[in-house]
Image 1 (cartoon, protein in one colour):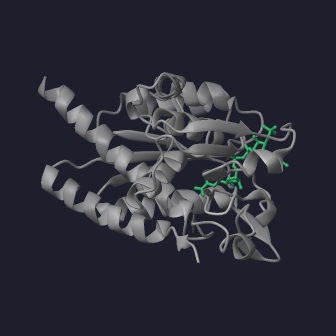
Image 2 (tube, helix red, strand yellow):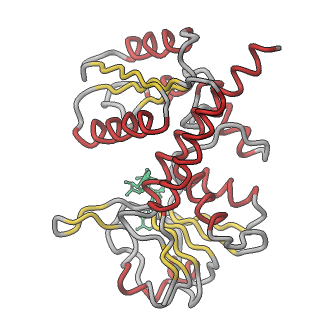
Image 3 (cartoon, helix red, strand yellow):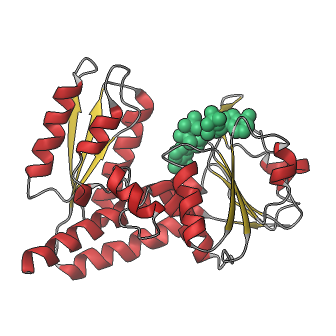
Length: 282
Ligand code: NAP
C-alpha cells in the first residue's frame, strides 16, 4: 500500500504557519489579481486565491476586465499595479482570452511582483540555477517531496508535459535539486518505457487516467498534476486506483497538487512583501 501524499493537509499546515509568520512580521502583504473575461473556471480559481489571502492575512485586490479588453488595456492595468506601492504581488489569471498577447502581458509584470514566477527574468533565473520567484504548481510539488522527505538528489525523475507553467519549470526545479531529469511530451517515442525508468514520475498532461500501471516502476513516487473531468468527476492524469498499489507514494486528485499551488502563491506573496520591506529599509 502506497503513502498518499496529502497535499491538502500540507497546504493547511503551511497556511497556518504562514498566517503566524505574517502576523509576527507586522507586514500587511497585498496581492492583486487580474482576470480578463468571465471564464467560470478562471473566476473560481481567482475566488479561491482571494479566500486564501483572507485566511492568512494578505490583502487582496481583484481587477476584472471585460473579455474584449485589448492587449494594451491589460498592459495598462498591469502597469498601474506595478507602480502601486501598496501592491506586493500581481497575478494575471491564465489563460487570457484569444487575441490578447499573453506573453507581452506576463513580461509586463514587474519581476519583483511576479509571484506566479512566469516573468522571463524569473524563469531565466530558475533555469540558470539561481531561482527567485518560481512557478507555484511545480514549487508546491517540491514542497510535497520535501515534507514527505522523499529523496530527490540522484533520483531519476521523469516529467510528462513541457508547458511553461508546469512541465518545464518542474524539470528545472528537479534539476536544481540534483535529480536526473527526463522531459517527455506528445512526440516522445516509447513513452511507457521512459516512464518505467522513473523513481519520481510527474504527470502534467491533462488527460484523464492516461498513466496506467504498466507505465510505473514498482516503488516509484507518482505526482499527478492533471485536472480532468471524467464521468462528471474530477480526476487526474493517473489511473489512481490501479497505480496506487504499485507506487510507493502518490498524490490524489483532488487533494494533492492543487491545494499546494495556492499555498505557494501565498508564500510567494509574503516573500515579495518581505523583500520590499527590506529594500525600503536600505
Ligand atoms: P498544456 O499546456 O496543455 O501541456 C500539456 C503537455 O502534455 C504538453 O507538453 C503536451 O505535449 C503533453 N502531452 C499531451 N498529450 C500527451 C501525450 N499523449 N503523451 C505525452 N505528452 C502529452 O497543459 P498544462 O498547463 O501543463 O497542464 C497540464 C495539466 O495540469 C492540466 O490538466 C491542467 O489542468 C493541470 N494543472 C493543474 C494545476 C494544479 O494546480 N493542480 C496547475 C496547472 C495545470 P506537447 O508539448 O508535445 O504538445
